[in-house]
Image 1 (tube, helix red, strand yellow):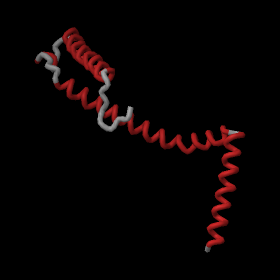
Image 2 (image 1 turned 60 degrees about the vertical axis):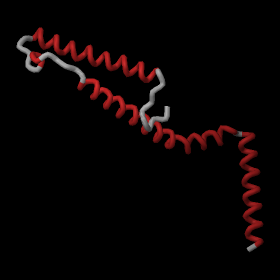
Image 3 (image 1 turned 30 degrees about the vertical axis):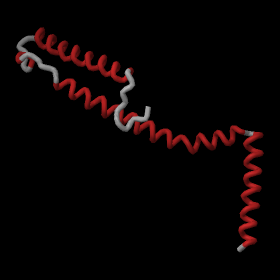
Image 4 (image 1 turned 90 degrees about the vertical axis):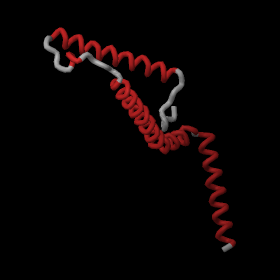
Length: 116
């Protein structure tokens, strides 16, 4: 049993020695392997982060749009001009949300579960 431990120790020592030599002579090999291993991890966290941001924005937009009080004649406009005016009111309200959202983000707010 003691011999086996010695063999394993020396095998690890030799492996470590060659790994150090390779890292000194050809560091791009180590960097490529590291990048290959790291890529799926980065992808997972990026997708998780994007999902948190998208869900936060959608819920904030829904709450913001609930605040919009349109005139009663906007629900069934009688003319094309009134329809355009009602759509314009909704677009102005949506643009106001986008401005407030960008101010909120620029001030440092992050949704729960977002890493950056």
